[in-house]
Amino acid sequence: MSVKYVCAECGKEYDITTRVFRCECGGLFDLGRFDISFSEKNILRHEWSLFRYLKALPFDDDVDVWKGITMGEGLTPIVPIEIANPNLLVKVDYMMPTLSFKDRGAAVLISKAKEMGVTKVIQDSSGNGGNSIAAYARRAGMECDIYVPEDTSEKKIKQISAHGAKVHIVKGTREDTAEEALKAVEAGKGFYASHVYNPFFYQGTKTYAYEVYEQLNGDIPEVLVIPVGNGTLLLGAYYGFNELFELGLIDKMPRIIAVQAEGCAPIFKAFKEGKNSVEEVTNLGTMAEGIAIAAPKRGKQILEAVRATKGEIIIAPEDKITEARKYLAQKGLYVEPTTAATYAGFLAYCKENKELVQEKILIPLCGAGLKSH
Ligand SMILES: *Cc1c(COP(=O)(O)O)cnc(C)c1O
Ligand SMILES: [Zn+2]
Image 1 (cartoon, rainbow, N blue to C red):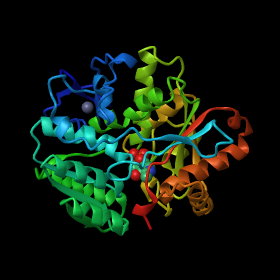
Image 2: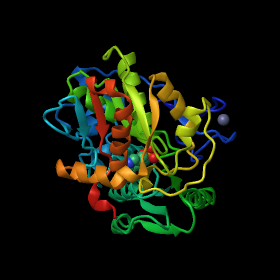
Image 3: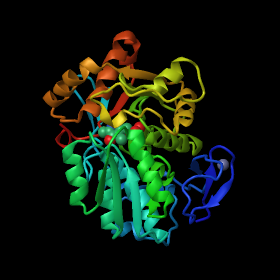
């Protein structure tokens, strides 16, 4: 596969076998273009995981490392919340091996790392990302160190340890945690399997779009509501739908309505102020720990993606999260607070934008209720 890393800032190309995780200019890596020969006909219909879209993923046909790593992630149900409203759909993306959508990214990133001979990975996360990387890394026979902030849910920390990873609990903020992980990477202690830095993670999350396309028989939603912290699902979904658009499989991009937490909303702020880049904010605290990212590294790309779809960035009202969680549970869907926040944000937005109810809307349920407080 001739795909390269391309610096998002200066455009410099790097071979993907490099062990540096960002450009010498400090810019983040994107993945360069590669041939996607995807059509409905070449979905691998007997592969019951996101690798059924292998023809759209950056793997050579003769490489099958992923077969020993996949755990059947993806293929999550799309259901209406209430049968009376068939246009309001949720994609139950916590129905995954480690109970969050992060398995999409981890399955692809760890498969790629294994292909390149990586034996030890390092990652930092507020919980779910660490769970996913720990599980897939172990399955791939790699050593794994995960850095988490001290306020991470105990259940998530237990799960990371259960997968045999070493957990480093870092005092301070999510950003302090990232810094510790980065130090370890720079000291040569392992491959940085970061869901923020490594663009292969986004190749996994982009299967969200391919799945929606297949499951809804091409009749894709007009609106995608997506929670956003670092933007792994948002950018992945954007790349995926963009590819489907460029392939001529869909005739229009869905609008992306991104949801941030009230207590930590740097991308919302930049969006409202008409800025092209995101400035760090202070995290004032939120129940939505999964999207509380004060300094999102891909902020600029997230703003571009949302604007390109004529979308919107909105806030999840903190005092409505518990209520939204209860409501979803009454519909049979037990989610973690970050996911309830996504729904609470959507409801608040609907109140001001009544015309929205006439459109087909899809909301991902990203994290399972059992993993959180
Ligand atoms: C990671 C995560 C998010 C947000 O993803 P980002 O990549 O930070 O935008 C949302 N919900 C849940 C449950 C998560 O685990
Ligand atoms: Zn650069």
